[in-house]
Amino acid sequence: MRQLLILSAFIVVASCQPAAPPSAPATSDQSTTSTPTTTPVSAACNDLAPDPAHTVLLASLPPAAGRALASNLNGGPLTPGTYDLTSGVVQDGATRWTEARAVALSVADGNSGAVVNYAEAHNGEISRWSANFSDAPSATLTFTCGRSGQAAITYQASNNELRMSIPAENGVGRFYMVFAKRP
Image (cartoon, rainbow, N blue to C red; front, side, top):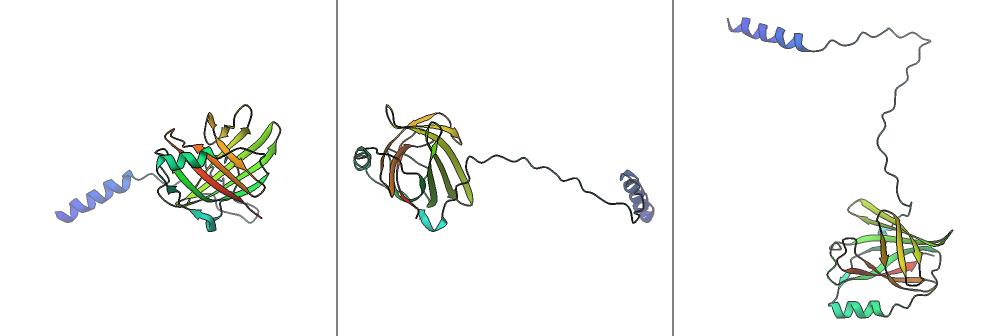
């Protein structure tokens, strides 16, 4: 009796399976093509590559010391090129930088001024943003990709270095970052 029940259950389960579609026999003049599956692709803001050899952890300073650093930034002409983060400070309660990461920044001449591209590598992920830079009447980044809106910044530029204090993405605090120009 038990064997009959098992055989019946097997027949019921087998009859529920969909039949395989018939396939035509292949001949020598038939070619097989496969339809590629498409995966959604998200466009990157830029193709900047952070250098893992320049991984940095930003320091934390008392608020007054962090503000003093940023208050000494007096602008200057931006020199086109690619820069690597060499050091920095978390200011005014900014969070998110609790682990080291590699950051690259590029400055290029655009149609209406300088274009700033940013790429940050952290835990195998790369986050990016791009912005138009304006220093009149005050230094501002207008984000075109990766972030939205504008950010009032302070900066100091020389031929081989760029120092920048930029608001955190979440609006709490700032990051004071020092970038050295790649050779």
